[in-house]
Length: 405
Image 1 (cartoon, rainbow, N blue to C red):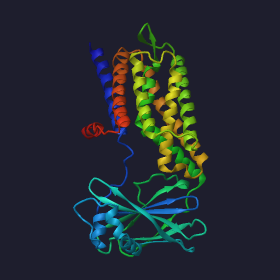
Image 2: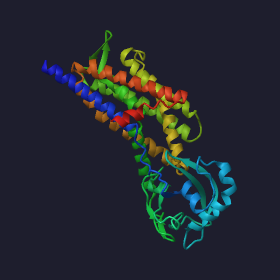
Image 3: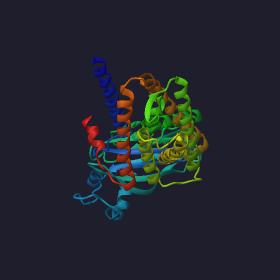
Image 4: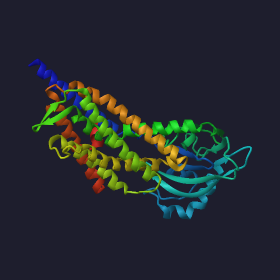
């Protein structure tokens, strides 16, 4: 009796831990600096031979210091900014300067848009750093918007993208802080190398597969029954490690070949599939893998089904690369590095989960509780994501669970 209670408790603990981890993982990747009204931001994107920048300034503070006369009882739109754009540019140009000594360069305004956060609205001004003959080693930056009028204001400088340092989509690590009017600081952009950039892309691939909870859950749905075999309609533990291991090699190979193929085709612009369709099918893939736990819909063709779904997971990986702009430089090297990182992350997940499942496969609670409850939980998560993605709705369930956890 005691052993049964212990086994049930252990099974429940495993399932609870997996659920908590998956829910928390789904909230990862939000490590961006919180945009506060008392702060302005300057983001740099360093490419092979170009430099661009984006200033993000809180609208309320800008309205006050530049005396723009913007309405304060609603969100600002293009029709509010357009008549005042020259005045805004004139004000910002006095407080934002970018130098490239010993070369000459200047920040040339391109366009603007808005960033709307929960508590504030920011005006985003986009610039191209123009005039230099070759990429400078350093930039001399002055960025003191609002500081003269509001000394408590703080301005932060970040490098958002720099391939050679392996920096992509950085919105959390500020390099320089401006808190005094007229302050000029030097930003070093000469560090980095092809190898460092490649390592950064590999790390990005690892992070994406580990933090991409839908990809992880698809692997989990495939791993759960990998240490069992269906005999006469019932799950039985495999007798040999090699039997389960060979099965894992087959499905991992099918998944790898498939997503590598579409990742390459999509990244190189040869094949394009709508993101909404891709994300919906990825969600559905988890559910069908979970259904197979209860009803043998794959019927010995697991590798083929996994290959087909792996094609869509590859399109999902390609969307990540496109959003971060990773392949805008050194496309083939970026593609190889990211895919290598995905494989490393995938193997790490298998290496952690598969041996554990093999060790407990003969315990009575495994097929009765872990497998069935795991399949049910995966199916519910799949349905939740599919509805959100296919019908473009926000059910607001996961944020509540995350808050409770």
